[in-house]
Length: 129
Image (cartoon, rainbow, N blue to C red; front, side, top):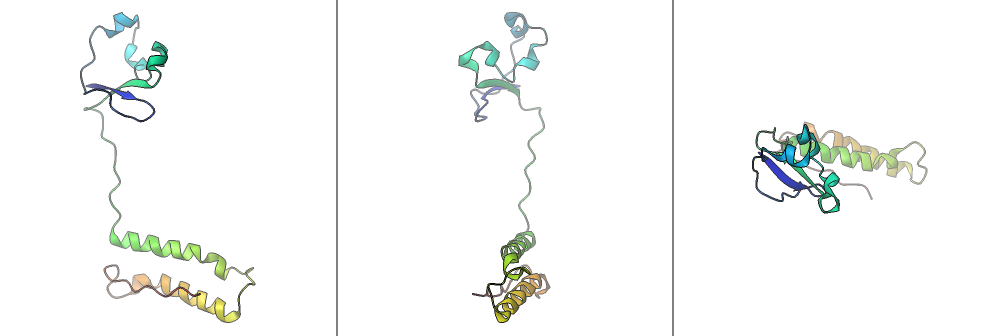
């Protein structure tokens, strides 16, 4: 089965259907099916259209939803990444106490997976000011 689609948006322009048997001779093409994916050669009215095989083609792979553990670990990694500059060796804008608070915060973030009910229950550390 084949379907006419708009190339710019992948919008379907008709229902899936078999290609007419006489298309090759009508267009004067041998092996015409390899020219159907982009019909711009037919003129400006067809520049954004193409025929695509559907139905028997393999379906697009859809990634599964991440698990709760994967989501929490992604959040931890994001928080660690966003606080990297706070503990960088060349950051001289904070006191030793402030730096120690950021180091402790980051340690607590890394320890979240060790919490007893992880990932169902997560106790998030308080971000230093």
